Image (tube, rainbow, N blue to C red; front, top):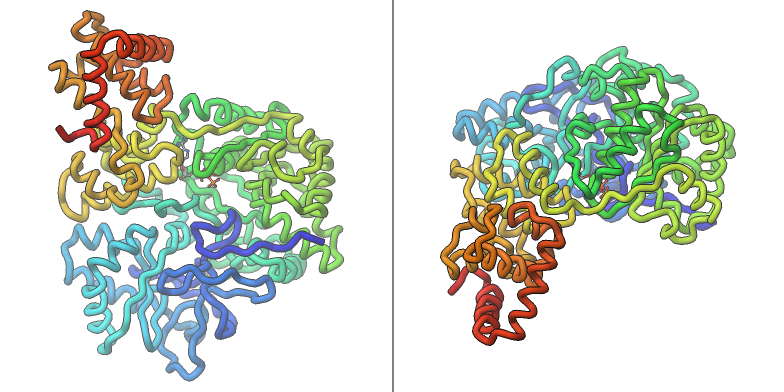
Length: 611
Ligand SMILES: Nc1ncnc2c1ncn2[C@@H]1O[C@H](COP(=O)(O)OP(=O)(O)OP(=O)(O)O)[C@@H](O)[C@H]1O
């Protein structure tokens, strides 16, 4: 059989549903709860998150490795407090976290502490190092660069001995203790760069019980056994509120939002409360996907069934899947939603085959109201899994249950996908989420910066939107980085600051002229203002430079006709086409104009702003 469980390396690269490091190993610097005790991992097993403690990606984990979150600990190490079950029962690292936090507060400015350390956590101390988890890669890089000394000094003060300090990245959801904080309202304005750069929405780390099934077929079998022994309301686990049934622990984020329902406990995602329909910026690129997802949530199993969303990386598919789940749970709190990555489905299937327990597998997948599967293209080349999914699909569909799928391509392009599945996927609604157009990107940048408490001015939004074109995750990352940079340096948000802060991110486009560069050249040459070019005025003195700018934008940037029209007062694509056509004719007939254009091109080719 060619199907095999898949493994991941770097957490940002891992397929959806493959859990990051277990939350149970994280302790709040401000005093989190201790984790439960875990078995000592084998020496060779690396961090569950797919990273070594220094942040380097690990080698892929093997299914039989039964991975546990922490790196190996020397048996002879003294019983100093550590996280992840390496401390004695009942011991907690939290007081050390408190103390370290207090020391740091005296060592740096309050705003620095607020920005970089308030949401970090001391997760481990051993003989060699103190490990601190931060919520995103930018914070990790920044702290490594500028605060390592401060931290080492603080740790030395704390322990009376020197220790190396290791900064690891754990997404915000993992750094939280969701149930402990369930009663707290979400912060109005996140004060730190919030989501991980290039990160995915929080994924449950196997959640309450470190739900390894999503991570490994081997653990899946163990989980199944645990499930059957404990039932759906298994007892509490450390790191979660005592007595809270697993289903509820799993749904803690939903509870926080006041949603009554929850995902099935065997789902491998936690709904990220930021991924709602309200928070989704709608534009021409995603309008259908958004509307269809809302429609499916209003009448599950009726309007758009199955709903198949496809699109490239980071365009918002998962966001819509999660928004769909939220919306269904709000309307139908009793609905049972199973939300998984396709990889988890495959892993569960393999493990059920191994265990000879297909009946249990089928019950699990068919006794639900809604099935949501991310990255269904993972079924490619997996004949047996496809067959099983075909039966699962039929069973749910015939029972009028809603099925929502996402993929990186349309059904017909999924390699080796059986025709019968392709045709079924097309029964309902297949819709593409396209990369965001310029206006949508602008709106996303504005929205994301507002969400982070610092709405960026238009010129910066324009700069970001012009330079990051395909991927909303990268747009988000840019906003996070810029705001973090501005808070850190205390410099106000400006275009120059944006160029500086985002230099690494948009390096590839360095030198490529932007519409901004073109506008600069054209307004300078023809002595007109940007507001003129964007105005409705049609006098020759304004219309001609506008047409030149449109022509240049068409020739030297990758913007679509619609986007170019948008830059110049919201004109439609036919106006741009007309301008391009007219300029091309003029270049042929008018040698002086042709020379002008050549000069523009040269200057733009030299970086646009020069000359
Ligand atoms: N239209 C949008 N409005 C607001 N946020 C968006 C939008 N599209 C995407 N995002 C945000 O961008 C990030 C990436 O989106 P998401 O994870 O949904 O992409 P994806 O298409 O599932 O990507 P991948 O295929 O890599 O998993 C998320 O934080 C999401 O909230």
